[in-house]
Image 1 (spheres, rainbow, N blue to C red):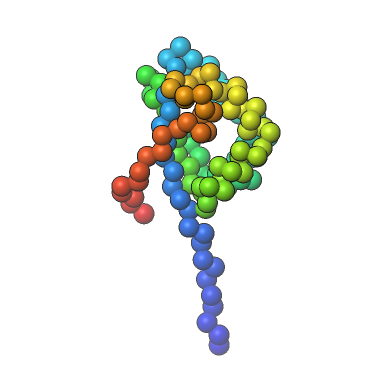
Image 2: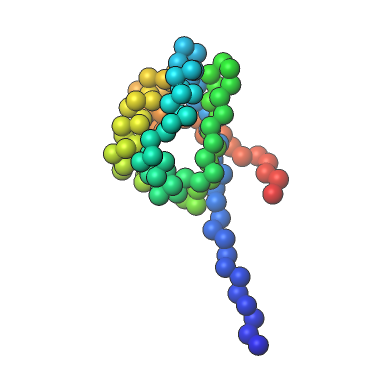
Amino acid sequence: MQPTTQPTATALTRVCFLLRVKPDRLDEYRARHASVWPDMLAALRDTGWHNYSLFLAHDGLLVGYFETPDLAAALSGMGKREVNARWQAEMAPFFEDLGGRNPDEGFLRLEEVFHLD
């Protein structure tokens, strides 16, 4: 009898980031995310963005979280998608302090200091 080999799971990097939505744009920001374009959702999935969530505080603080097997590849993959260019251009006016960058380039990534598995 030969030993069975269990498939190994791909290690995922957990990514958490911050942005700030302009207070006067909060309602519209929520509305836009209630109906994200299907081709944008497909692009995120196809480029390795998994378990993606956005959390919005009443003052505009936006906390994003996603998991990916390769952060550089996920960012690069989205950077090559036309739908992402359109989405980023439409969403950029919602945010404070991007310094001329798109939201997907201007977020502050947080360091993970603890994880309970």
